[in-house]
Image (cartoon, rainbow, N blue to C red; front, side, top):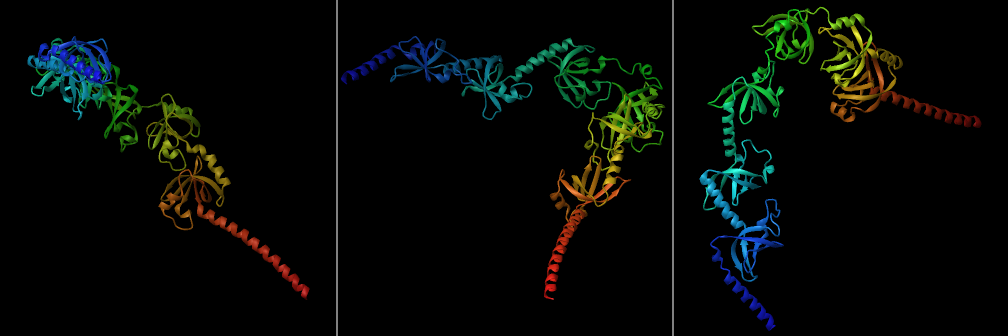
Length: 569
């Protein structure tokens, strides 16, 4: 026991002697020591600092912003000696303190010289209004100073090593604020200056669309932005620049004007091409007929695009020979492709007047010369509107089906019956074109024989199976077949009066039920059904069965009694 105590005392005395030989003051105040990592044990890093004892460094000081160890055994690093741990026998050193000391000197020097300094973005501030930048010392980078543009994904900036400008320092707390945006703006201004010296009106240059606004699009020409006004995008009509351009598009533009004092550059896209009105008379002479697209509807007519940059007016008075229409939309809709004829041309005022009624023979008219009323033809659904459907018959020939000619029963929209691109049979129902010069077609007419067959087999009083299609306050619209619809009035639902709310609770679209045919109108293709009448009819049947059974029972008992009386006599 005595020997053990002597050993401890001796080790302490030996270490004390070693420490006396290592005087912290001998290496100078805050002087760095160069050492080599010899071991990493748990949270301690053992460093050979060239003394008779080793230096111990907290492992946390060697971690990067992601928590990974930046050094390994054998690496050489610089540290500061802080104090001595007499109990365990080592010298406590710090790399972080040295980094902060050197970092502050570098930051302070950069601030005085107004020079950029490198740093690494290590984390977001707790309120996420900026970042912490490691420059040896930690500096604050406001979110508004990260970039010229707003930072959309803040976390993606973490770990990036960039250059910054020191804009504010606090010597007492050894902290400050840095900015990257200032450097970027300075760089952009220098590029703008150089680029403005090389640009000249009339040049065609490449650029990238950076943003789109209501009045035009901004284009980056390689460090300087110019504006393409909406009017300079196309010779044609555009309502918004997004109709022609998208952010990120690479385009060629023509420099129209440069204001070197303000740095504003006016650009054009359409100016790269010849004005389509230059030889307009040769391409659109009076009397020329062509197919063109409706691009805008106004109260007095429709604007028709003949080609990009050239529009003509189809006046409301030139739509039809059948008097002045009450509305342009009765005849044309935006997106329609129409046969039109050039009837007036004024190059100076850049105006072309078009006519529709002036056309003498249309493809639809030639089509009706070959196909007569009552003929069944194959047609493709091209466009569905609320009140009518346009059908393609052959190249350049369209037919139209009014919603009332789709089905004998009521439908809210043609889309309940068909979809665009679908091919189906239709019947020509007139030898004349409609007011829009379309072949008049009907679909419900194909079901004529089906209606007559149904009415022949199902007289009033017969029972049919139906499917509920719609429930409303008036009653139930039911489907008997695809082409035949019936209706059950709310008063024919039950013996007791029910409310529309009760009706909706009892019946849902898709329910399959049985009903009694109460009335049919062959010519009007209407069938009225009744649940109340069916219930009564079935009650009568049950009553008749019951009465018949009672009659049979009474007769049998009477016969027995008569027999007994006869015996007594």
